[in-house]
Amino acid sequence: MVAHYDENLLSDMLPVYYTRLFPQNIFCRWLACGNSPQPLSNRELSFTLADDVYIRYLSISNQKEFQALLQKKCPYKLDIGAVYNNKPSISRHDAVVLARELVFDIDLTDYDEVRTCCQEAKVCDKCWKFMVIACEIIHTSLKDDFGFQNILWVFSGRRGIHCWVSDFEARTLDSPGRGAIADYLCLIIGGDNQNKKVHLGVDNLHSSIRRSIGIIDKYFDEVMLDQEFIGTPERLQKLLKMIPDETLRDIVENNLTKMPQSSLERWKSFVNIYDTYLRENGNAIRKIKYLLEEIKIQYCYPRLDVNVTKGFNHLLKSPFSIHPKTGKVSVVFKPNNARNMKLDEIPTIYTLLDDSSPDNVQHQNNMRSAVKIFQEVVFSLEKAEAMRRRNDANTTLEF
Image 1 (spheres, one colour):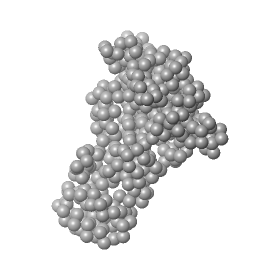
Image 2 (cartoon, helix red, strand yellow):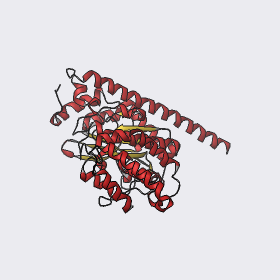
Image 3 (cartoon, one colour):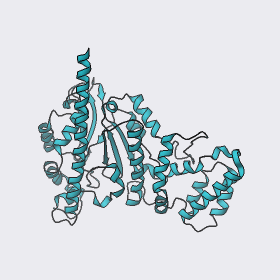
Image 4 (tube, one colour):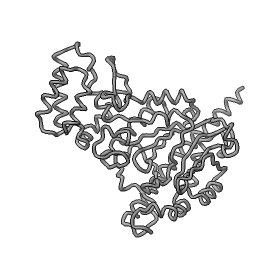
């Protein structure tokens, strides 16, 4: 169809994509489970059409209606909102939010102060490793610390990832509850003018923080090599500004500025200097007890858009929608496979529809794999919902 992506041709490609490739059935089943016990029609959908025409408070009752709406509007972007006490399309002014998946939005632009390979909208396989770390840390915490099971991970289509938690307990959390989880997962605090944004205190570290540092350690040397965090005088100054102890800071600066500008070698030297300084100064330097951990966290820990998680009304991009700027599909992926993902292997609408494209076969296979992962998540969610309804019915009968 086309040799490479041209946004001007999106209006021609989208009807074919929505008809042939968008997983409408399993998508509606996923939304229906997320609505339970409310009907599917109580869920808000939002479409962005050509020329940035924005339509909110759409609703559907079944897959047939959804298919007709897709064919009629052919949205450039499809977003998902909350579940209301009535159809949002007819009572939006007095509608009350009853449920919403617990969602997380992680965008690589929030890493611009630490990533050196790309900036702003650009993304590459090197900075994708930040997303790999974020995915593993958040997924592990959601399962181990909060007991959530129905977790969906989605590539945003350009430079980030989204997480949807569909457990009933997660969907029915109030805003303070969502905020508490978001705050629990946030360790990097401070604006652009703050040099050191992680402060772990002097007490024993919480087990979740130790676990997160263990995850970061698996990737840290590799990311240090990729990003060269301290490979230039300017970047080295950023590290020095994170050291609150003036004496240690001077020692580090004097030693590292004389070294070759390999970030990994400089980091290893810094660690040795730090360890020696701790041994020689004992308890007098409690304020830098966790300095290495704090720096690793500031470089590599997930940077969440907390407002997306806390609020009910924030719309989030649908799985399998197309990013209009890149043409990439917002594919579902397994968190334990994030490390193996390559950005150029993520399906695009033009390679999926162009049989002559050299990437067509691989992208078709990757698209099928993503749909299969989505199906597995939905099947698990449906089983959990059926069990919850049975338990609720049994509890009612006991009374």
